[in-house]
Image 1 (tube, rainbow, N blue to C red):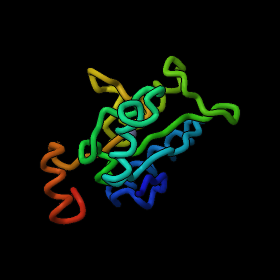
Image 2 (cartoon, protein in one colour):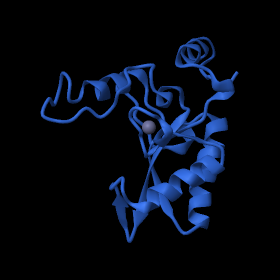
Image 3 (cartoon, rainbow, N blue to C red):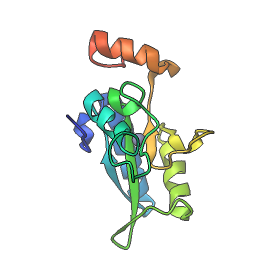
Image 4 (cartoon, protein in one colour):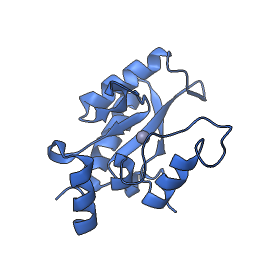
Length: 147
Ligand SMILES: [Zn+2]
């Protein structure tokens, strides 16, 4: 079961954008840390179970089953801003607006833009606007969605 936060576990094309995101934030005086990169299917399934079939007292932490998250294809990363040494989880904090703006400037798509369940810490890159179904096929055939 793999639930990585290493940038080296991202697809090389995605890693470049993620690195630019971290660098550009730093350049503007915002420290961000990457909390999640690649999650394998098994790990996604375990995460999906939280709040549903296990740890039922918790809120669910993802809407995505295995194969339905760009994290499963090494194409997404999650971040949190660090201010005065502490992670800022409050969605109302203006630092998020900056982090999201900078992410989009360096070429990422932002989970913050999802109309139904905005996901502020989530950024992703996908080739040719492919669907998750196409991504799954590419992943199974080639081990990467960037073909
Ligand atoms: Zn994410």
